[in-house]
Length: 354
Image (tube, rainbow, N blue to C red; front, side, top):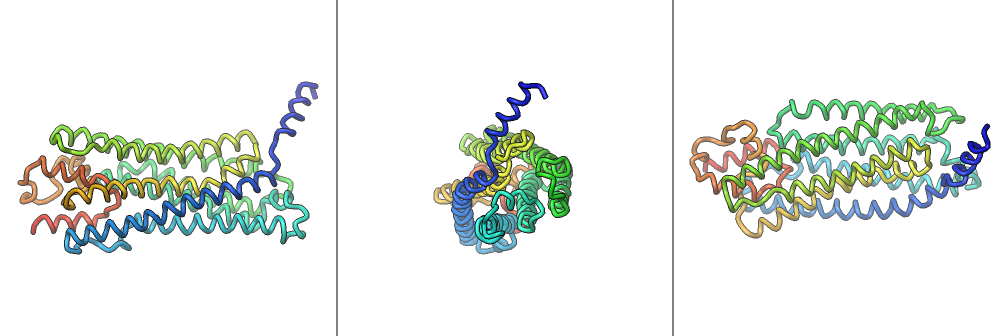
């Protein structure tokens, strides 16, 4: 080997962070990230309960119960998965330093990719990513008036992520002890996972942003009092940026064969959960502030966007006879409501006939 190549190889070996150090550093940062996620989740649940109580008080309880809302299932599902990942990571620390071989070889334990706890943790990790991507796809479907055409591409990428999320744990369970996580057998799954989830989130953020921008421009043209939706657009972009940047970090560290990719993968589910909960909390806080100023409007942003996409009124002609300016003002006042379902739409339609 050429002397310069030998020098570079030795230099890389010296700067490579050991796996034990990465895992110990990850434990602290992971707990901090889980604390943020826990606070956001608790706030989201409290604000959701408050929101539904206000809705029932204003609309005489004709809306579906909280447990009928798909987004609430997603909130609890993410909470369970992220909590399970956090518990399992600490269990692995106890295994490495106390249980397996009396803690004499923690580095060897962490390097064992066939360890059952690692296989389960990997499955939980990708279950979290799959659920997170499924929820943002659901948001796109609702925002775009329940159109299946707009979600064809993200559904395909979600299927790809699901296949890879199943394939990687299975591959690890049958991994040869001589191979590392950077071997091509695992690399094709991890690389595909990063690409699929990046494509899903970038696409969904773009189409949601375009729809919000469109309704903001439309509402400004019809009513000077309509509240701008650009703050909602900013919420989506900022939350998506956090997840996207972290996914790129995982991708780059893996391609560079750095042990920091273990750090990136361990924190990945918390970033996905935080990104999702940030949208819920910030949107719910905006709704709570607006609900104190005026009564709960009959329209929400989902229905308004749907009506623009179809170019026809979403309700019966009796409601459509009301002044357009008032309708758009109510729609933008309730622009923070991204979690209603078809049942909510139908119940609000019945209310408009009363």
